[in-house]
Image (cartoon, rainbow over all chains, first blue to last red; front, side, top):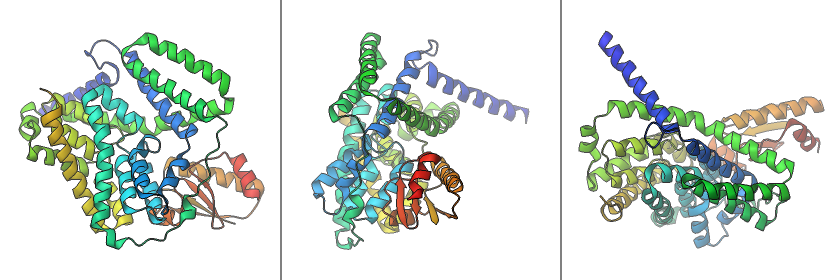
Length: 359
Length: 77
């Protein structure tokens, strides 16, 4: 009895250490990395800025029933950059665009890519899992959104019956007093700060000065306040669950044996990729927590092919998500969607594992 | 008036309801509050972004949580 208790305590202690190292000491477990916390903060600020300074409505209008279909697909597959931070906000949007006449294909493309390519997820993938996995994640999320959306459309093209309402997509542009070029310059500066903050301090400082100049010149106090509030809102919404997620990953990291992980997903083949993709479609990951999970799994010997499959299938789908999607699409279409996601995610994992990643 | 708060029960939805209640109280009008949480019902209103406020069947706010004072102005009309 005492032994069991001791083991449990050890595991919990390991998990806490994992959490601490993950958050503050990513390189060697000894040097406190202020830059990491800082760049995470910048990434959140960018997400907050997207919420405040970019017009979400401007994106949604491309989904109307009268929009050109190829344009709907394209916008849907990249809209994750602008629209979504977590699948919880993707689902209501998905339900509404679908109900009001967006084609099944673009709606599904949106559903898939929304949570996969937001700036926070990409940033974390880049810093934690490496540039190659990050690029594969972005590119294949965009391509797969189109492919899966179009496949859904082809399978169900006979059953397109909706209460079409072009009016619902004629949303007012969120007014911002900033001109387009001002906003473009602002986002460019923010992105440059984020990119350099990972590696190099000096340019970061220069761009930060540039950012400050822009803020002083163009921004009103209200703009700043809204930006701050939106950022803080996101932090509050995401960080607590994320930390719990990392803690749970820490427990797994402590309990799972290398041999076990290697025997399951250590190789890159059909089975391992399908297994990883299936796990990804069913498992619920708190926003962003798929990244530390994979970091730990890769460390324990998972191959990067199946890791990619899991990364593609993970954030978009989970069992609770499926239930909500089934309410909107019906059981049959939802099942088709889940199978398509699993199969294509596994396929990309297999290809990337065999041809793109070295070693 | 009839006020519906649309949203899947997130923090922001509760905040919006809270603000709306304050606004109604400040205006001193009679209002019934309802919560709409079913995703299909929300979609029926054509609301793309939650939380949203529907007043007497009309979408007043979507995707934002305005302050109670601002809501008061909006509800006056």
